[in-house]
Amino acid sequence: MNLLTPLTSSVSLRMEAPAEKVWDLVSDVTRIGEFSPETFEAQWTRGATGPAVGATFKGHVKRNGVGPIYWAPCTVTRCEAPRVFEFRVGTQGRPINNWGYRIEPDGEAACVVTEYFRLEPALPVKVYWLLLGRLRNRTNQRGMRTTLERMKLVVEK
Image 1 (cartoon, helix red, strand yellow):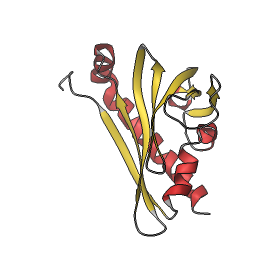
Image 2 (tube, helix red, strand yellow):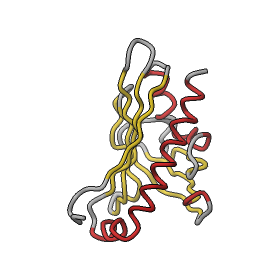
Image 3 (cartoon, rainbow, N blue to C red):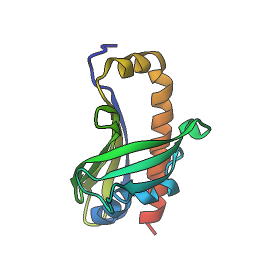
Image 4 (cartoon, rainbow, N blue to C red):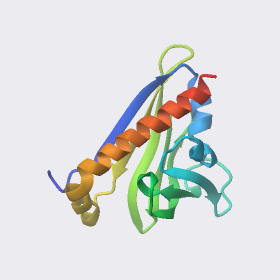
């Protein structure tokens, strides 16, 4: 493994719903607890009330679904309705990773939704990924699949 290569992974799922409906769901961070197996709640912070580049929120995470439990500071980095919603996890000076959703129309009333993460290129993160990345990636893949499947049930009602 090259420690200088950015590490990323993604899961995609087709949903029988218009991109705008999916966008409303993925960009409302206060609803993530309904879908994610690890982040059981989130709230906008520092006066933010909705998705916009620079808006901040914090996610309450139960790592691997069992712990430890902690609040993770997040900042919206891409907000292109109804196509891309992305946020950075970590503080401005110490970002750890980025999570996001890409929504691509697939016909008139359907879309393909991709959830992804991308690690920051900091050496400590790369070393962690080298040692535990295979296990963590498997956990992230399962979590992203679960999140998208739960969202699909809501948007296809």
